[in-house]
Length: 636
Ligand SMILES: Nc1nc2c(ncn2[C@@H]2O[C@H](COP(=O)(O)OP(=O)(O)O)[C@@H](O)[C@H]2O)c(=O)[nH]1
Ligand SMILES: [Mg+2]
Image (cartoon, rainbow, N blue to C red; front, side):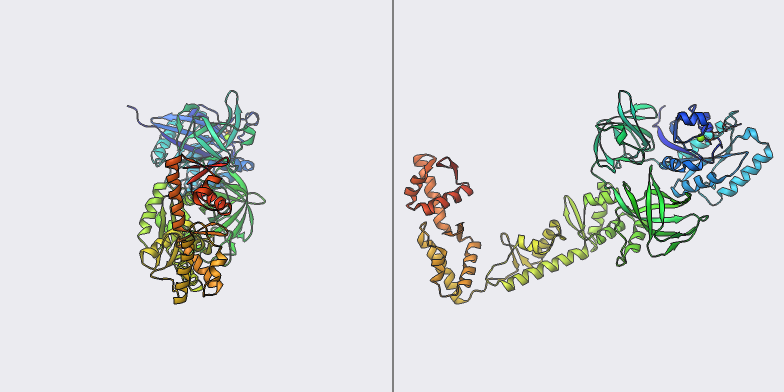
């Protein structure tokens, strides 16, 4: 009976010459050293890979170099390890890189493993027992405290079956990975393959990838097409998390690809140069000072980082703190990603930690809420995190931004937003696409809108209200359109403002015209109504009134806003009825004489001069009543 195969990555760790590579070969039949130089010198320089299939488990082995000079290669391999295979030679016991590799795996958050005491054929039973005790002591209070310790010999094959059994038990405890998450593959190798083109390999840490997918290359940003995918040496339809994966890419030279880059779902994430982290220092190192430069390793990437400690001047050995890291090169990082820091010089591992905010701001003294915020990012649930992020976002957050900041799936974000919308902390100002703002920001926008409307009406008593567009602009760019719209709707629903047409006004407010103004307004309208199409000039009409010109102009504005009058050209205004009649006339003409009319015929039909005819025809074109065709108009 076939069961679904589980893919599990086993990573070796341990001091040089302790038999890591030999053990991988003994277990899998594949010697992991690939490079000619490795074969010649008999040491592992770079990562090696091998596979083993055992009763429903597909083990991908990542063999790392033990030499201290190649720890950065080791680090590239350690990302994505599910099960640690800690190798300690029975004839040498614990050595410096045993400790360093072990620290690294602990800092990277590796949760389980198996210990192999190699070269048991070289020691007697007493020595083996001694090394076992030293190993138990070494692992006390660590994540490997209860891990099986298996003496083996790659030479005689002793203990190999027991070790395989221990690996299977550990593999059974590796939690299943969700292939539905966003695809992410840190690249550890890039090369060209005859007949295929560019190929990259890596441990698939999230999501899945298959032929035909579009992927984004980080940090470059290129969008690339996947031609094919292999996993464990076989072509597969889709590679899933926890698999060693080779991706054949179209449209790029292999020389443009290298270790440290990453492939990811397209358009979801942003590269970053500033991250806020929980930084942990190893107990055995010197204290870390504010502003220190360190080597930074995450995934398969490596760069230099400058450390700014939030709230502290230095990080004591064995301590931990919130820190902001400024990276020399831009990387793709997401919250939850683990990293290692190594001393700038001499290069030794001094600590590591976890990314809390991958798109962090520059540290600022006045940003006093950051520590509390990072605490929530570190310990909070999705709702608490989303609320805190929204509260710190000056403009609020939309769905895309939340995905880029968190790596959460859309349904997770919507579920958290849904729960939050019942509280006053967060306001869902748009559902599709989702936009969230803090309750506080929303209240501020509401208040500002009311203030602006009131101020406008005080300053412009003869205008019926402020235009939506002007109101929106007066709030500045910091207010998203969605926030503005929702706040306005809220105010309308509460009966605080009214929004007739394109205007916004205080609820119940009317233009307060004085008697002489009301009369003048009527006079203006009457003058244009009486003129029909042979309209007088605006000056002419306004001068005849008993109110001063400035007020008269405001009254004219009111009539235009009410659409009683229509401005056809900069200096021609017509009464609405006159224009309605004109359109009527054209339709009658069309029925009787066809849909074409020349300018002279139009003049004749309407009895007006060229001075009026041309602007009117252009107005009618704009209104889609007519369409220009050469010297004539087509009545539509
Ligand atoms: N006698 C004996 N030699 C071993 C055993 N495992 C590895 N070796 C030898 O130890 C040396 C280093 O092994 P290697 O696998 O390259 O160590 P690595 O640096 O940890 O990968 C090689 O010469 C191996 O042949 C073992 O179980 N017994
Ligand atoms: Mg080796």
